[in-house]
Amino acid sequence: MEQPATVLIAARGLGLGGMERLITAHIHAADRSRFRYSVAYVNAEKDDLVPELEALGVEVHLLSDGLTPWPIALRQLMKRGCYDVVHGHSPLVASAARIAAQSIRPKPLLFYTEHNSWDPYRLPTRWLNRMTYPLDDSQFAVSRAAKDSVPQHLRVKLNVLNHGINVESVRLRRVERASARERMGFAETDVVVGTVANFRPEKNYEGLLRVAQQMTSVDPHVRFVSIGQGPLADDIGATHRQLGLGDRFMIMGAQPDAIGLMAGFDVFTLASHVEGLPVAFMEARALGIPVVVTAVGGLPDLITDIEDGFLVPPGSDDALAEALRIVTTSGAERQRLSIASAIRAHDCNASRATSIIETHYSEALANNQGGHNVDTRMD
Image (cartoon, rainbow, N blue to C red; front, side, top):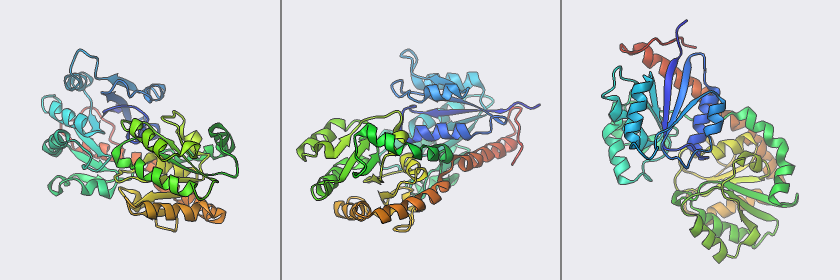
C-alpha cells in the first residue's frame, strides 16, 4: 500500500487562541489513512494544546530551544522530515518556511492559511509576508475580509474557506449550563452576556466595558463575563476598576475549558474592531447561544442580521448596547435566536473545511512531478 502523505503544520504557538484551536479541529477531522500530520511551533510559553495533539498521535516539535534560532531549526526539521506538504498558519512562520523550502530537495509543497486581516501585522511581518507570498502553492483565507486585506496582486492562489470546529462534540456540552453557571456564581435569574476574546487592541474591550457599565446600571439582572488573556490585561483591569463594575463584569482570564463555561452564557458578544473568523463565535453557535457581534471579518458572511443574530457597526457603543438590550430583556427573543444559532452551526463544521483542504493537498501532490510516494485518492 502507498504510504500516507506527510504534512507539517507550522504556527507561532499552540496556546488557547482561535487559530491554534482551528489547527487541532483540522487534525481531529483529518483522514489519517491518507495524511500523517506533524506540528511545529515557536513560542514555548504557548503550549496548552500540545498534550491534545500528542494524544492524537501527532509529533509536535518546539522550534525554539534557546540554542538554535527558530528559522534555522524550522529548516532543519523540514529537511530532516522530508515532508510532502508544509502548511503555515501564521505569517512570520510561514515566511520562514517559504524561504527554507527553496533550498530543500525534494521541495515540499507550500500551503498557507490567512487567519486575520493584515492590518494588525507589524510592519516587518507584513513586509516579509508580502515578499514571500508568491512562493506558496495554494492559500486559504478564513473570510472574505481576510482575503480582501491582502494586496490584490497577491490573491491569485488565495481561496476563501470558512474553517470550522467539531460542532457535534461542542453541542453535547449544552447540558452543562447549570453547572457552568454555578461555577461562575450566577443565579438562574441572571442574564449572562459572555465574551471569549484575548486582551488585544483589536478586541475593543474598553468599548465592551463601557457598554456593560451602561447596561448593568439600568438592569441589575444583566451580568457580563469575559474569558481571555493577553498584553492589555493590566489596562483592562484598570478600566474595569475605574468604571466601578465589580462583579457585574467578571474577568476570568484564560480558561482551559472555555466551552464548558460558555455553556452557561445566555448571550455571546464580541465588540471587536478586527476579526478573522472567531472560533468562540463558532462554539457559541454550536451551543445554541444567541450572538450579538460587530460586523467585522468573516462574521457578516455567517450571520443574517436580526434573523439569526445581531450585527452592529464596529466602534459604536450605542449600537452594541441597543442590540444587547433587545436580546437581554426578552426571553422569547433569546429562545428564537438560540434555535437559529443551533441551525446555522453546521456552517462552521470542521469536517467540511478539512475535507476541502485535504482535497487541495491531494490535487497538488498529484500534479507535483517531484512528489513522494503519495496516496492521491480523491473523495
